[in-house]
Amino acid sequence: MEYTEEWVAARARQAYAHGRATFEMRPEKTALLVIDMQDEFVRPGWSPYWVPAATRMAPRLRRLVEDCRAAAVPVIWTIFDDTHLGLDRPHALRCLPHSDADWRRPGPAEVWEAMGARDDEVLIRKPSYGAFYDTPLDTVLRNLGRDTVVVTGTLTNYCCGTTARQAYERGYQVVFGADVTATDDEARQEPELAVLRKGFALVLTAEEITDRLRVATGTAGPASADRGGAERV
Image 1: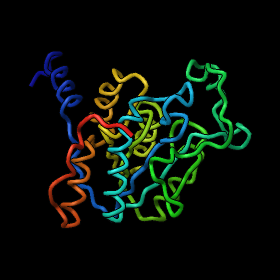
Image 2: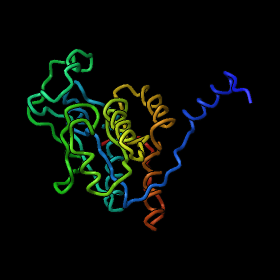
Image 3: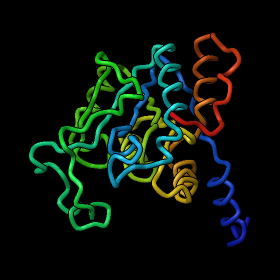
Image 4: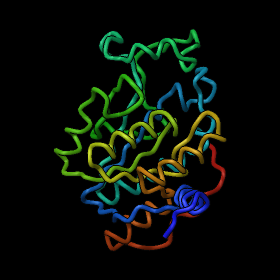
């Protein structure tokens, strides 16, 4: 067979748009990562780094958190914070447009209260985009016996996408939440999902994730109503 330019281009387009990883989700081997759903990104109008799309999708993510708790899937929260006097943060960040605002946190970063994080759930404060960079996340997951991570939160194409790639490189099976991640320019959402879909992760909606967990635990039933609609907190 001759692999023409048209053939390889069509194959790539198909994978970006419709590719699906083939691994199964097993609740006893899965953990939910909620990336950086913190005040400065999700609390409306609180900082110049507010991500309105993250605020809109927060109720859907909150329901997924509850569904995972019901399936005995541990929930792990991360926060992008000032740690170790900033000496553990990549120094190039200060040179990039992402950090061009003069705004500073008034205190330690916290998960937005509306997300309902619990004291008995792991909270990891991270110094950079990816949740595995200079954090104990890999150790925590291995101690929990988890080989699959569900990545949710914000920003899709920064902290969430970087975490998904880092997890893939460490041998984890990665599920990426298509409608429980959000970015500051919504036109960037689908291009990032396309890359992850083709080469790094199983990209699913929150409803699809919950349905797979219910099937695996033998509690399959009607999904929660209005999961896909516009939502407000």
